[in-house]
Each structure stands twice: as C-alpha cells, then as structure tokens.
Image 1 (cartoon, rainbow, N blue to C red):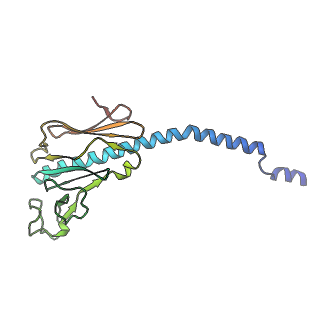
Image 2 (tube, rainbow, N blue to C red):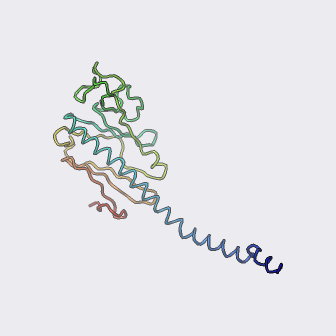
Length: 206
C-alpha cells in the first residue's frame, strides 16, 4: 500500500521533463515570428490612424470655426512631431500653450470669455482658453516605425475644409518589417489611408 502511494506521489522523470521543455521550445519557435509580425502590423496601423485622425480633426475645426486651421509637421531630434492651430506656422515642439507660436486652439474654459472667432492674443482670452494641439508618435517610433516626411504643413480653409495645397499631399509610414501605409490628403480635402497590400482592411495604394 505504501509503495503504491509513493509511486503516485513521485515527480516528473527526466525524460518527461525533457519532452516538456522540447515542446515549449517548439511552440515558442513557431509563435515568436507570428507575434512579432502581429505587433509590427499593429504599431504601423496605430501610428497611421493617429495622424489620420488628427488631420481629420483639423479639417473639421476649420469648417466648424469658419477660419483656416494650419497643420505643421516637424522632425525634432530625429522624432516626428506635429500639431495644428489657429496660428500659421506654429511649432509642434513647444509644449507650453502660453508660449508664442505654440500649436493651440481657443476653447473656452467655462467663463464665457473666449469664442472661436477671436484671435490668439486677444485681451478676452486667458491662458486657460488655450488648448495645446501638439502630438508625436514617439511610442511607435521606438517600435521601429519610420516616415518619409521632413518639415511641411497643410492648411485647411473654412470652405468645406479644402486644403490650400493645389495637389495631393501624402505621407508614407514604414514598419520594421517593411510594411508601408500612406496618408493622403487630396486637393478637395479628402483624407484617406492606403497600404502596400500587406494590411487587411485597407485599400491598396495605386
């Protein structure tokens, strides 16, 4: 009876342990490339969708405020920063909304003193009415996302959000595994995303 209990209570044999380790190694070998590809794809989509959504927001602000909204893209210390503002030529690297040339919008803080038709610098605007509209994709860049742009801007006019650019503007983002996605702003204000054909759910770039 005692010998039966001991046999049931014993641990793994060396052979069983080696087989288990071998199976784990095989599963990891098969799974790691797949996981790497998955995260590469998600990082590229995340960076592209982030910039796309902010461009859409800038265009909508131009229409709703009935005034031009200016977007600026800038590479600072090797990292892409961008923003949009009622100010022409704003600097997206400025993190203080009260500084001159910061990328800001006037949004009333609740005291009723500020309206969207006012200009930045008006005496009716206090610091709480200035909302910083500067962004970056540093988290995605650390995961291997790169881009083909330098310093450029897109100005959205109040009339239907049409950009001042007379030709299409596009920006290409690339992943560590050489996938590509493009953000395209057409001359009539349409903003779209396309891919190199490796990203499901997006049209293939011509």
